[in-house]
Amino acid sequence: MSSSSGLTFKLHPLVIVNISDHYTRIKAQSGSASPLPRVYGCVIGVQTGRTVEIFNSFELHYDATQNVLDRAFLESKQEQYKKVFPKYDVLGWYSTGSDIQDSDMLIHKALTDINESPVYLLLNPAINHAQKDLPIAIFESELHVIEGVPSLIFVNASYTIETVEAERISVDHVAHIKPSDGSSAATQLAAHLTGMHSAIKMLNSRIRVLHHHLVSIQKGEAPYDHSLLRQVSSLIRRLPAIDSSRFQDDFLMEYNDTLLMTYLATITKCSSTMNELVDKFNTAYDKQNRRGGRSTFI
Image (cartoon, rainbow, N blue to C red; front, side, top):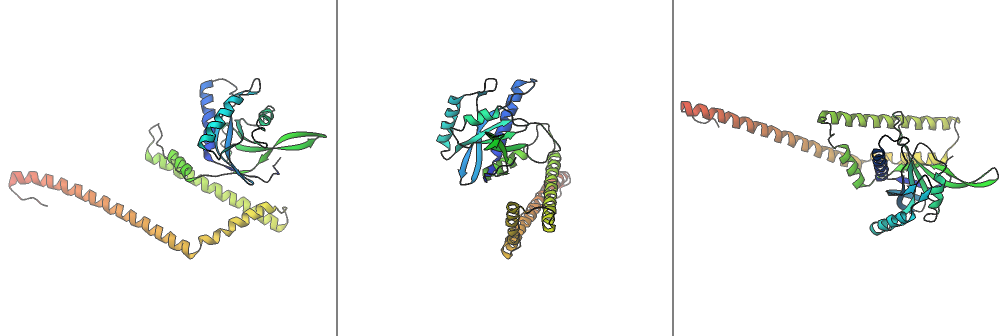
């Protein structure tokens, strides 16, 4: 069931990295224990109007056997983060697993005194090579009447990945770290190009799906989704800006600067190679000069 709150969720990569690190550490400490214990934590960020932006997260101490949450630890961590990030509030919590568990609603209700409508972020640590999307789902809680009884249930909410400059630099740095297995630069380049190819292929497939859906709407085979049409219209309105004369001028200037830097690098490398060749030639010619009394070539 999808959410009807109309909230827009923006998730930052740091949250995904934190949850993955938390799960990896617990998995390493547990060894071959099966089933692996779930991990729990809080997500923090800023809510501005109808936009919820999740920036960071921290771990929680939760006893799954007795369903007891360590409130003192939660309040201590919340106070520490408030000192460093005064604008960040506790927006909800996270856990790991393939699906929602019955006990999840107990934790969810325990956090309603901090946030009256907390969000629940669920990360699936199981590896699925056929899955193209991130194994992350965000849920909201809504009050529904089920068989005449009001019940609080989880509903799925859509989200987008949002990054700031520091996060983009960090992710790019991690992507370019040399593997510990001694892989060559060519192997890293091949992996990078393979990733780029997969990304472009995925983008192309999603554009085809979107185009097919719009054609179906035009033919009357699919119902109108005004929210989707507004997003498509907003995306299309950005395209003419790329074809403006100002963009062409800026693009050509940057392109020419790049070519110039490439030519200068090539000339510098060629000059260095020629200089090494001349030094080696002079060394060899100087030895002959000592034996035959001839002058230096250069």
